[in-house]
Length: 248
Image (tube, rainbow, N blue to C red):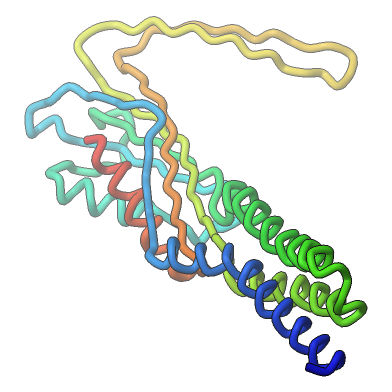
């Protein structure tokens, strides 16, 4: 075989092998994450005492301080609670339960960034390193053509990896539930209020109430390769509504 033909064959082989190696991460992600995975978790369990049907009244206050104010859960939570036999009323003083929630974060999550960095790093480095290792193994026989093939493999591998993203979307919500009961709860609170750089003010208060207070956080996330927000939002909404209404 002529030297020129040998160089072309080696270059083509290098390019094919580099593309296979650099594409492994992207192919794995696209196959392993082909189905939408949605999970909803609560940081701590809340148990409420069962009450008679006439006491199943609830005041609902759900807010959204995230950058997606259109992600409004109240109407669906109210409908789910009414479907469970509760009566949602506008008077907090007359309601047996309060459900207060604040949607803190909606959108892409940091978990996705960590996973994407891991896969992209492997894919890009794999292309360059594999090309260099094969070039050394052949003793540099292909010369500049082999180096060019390795560089092309790294560039194409990175571009291919960019077509497959391991995407996470999440919704994080803080919740507080108040429950009336036949007894007295004594509450005390202390707040440290900063006054610029000159010092701070300590504020303390105490009170007696007939309500027990519970707090927790609900996190719902969706994961899929190349997931779009429009696909994740309905499932995240359903998971969050199910979690909030399922407490009662």
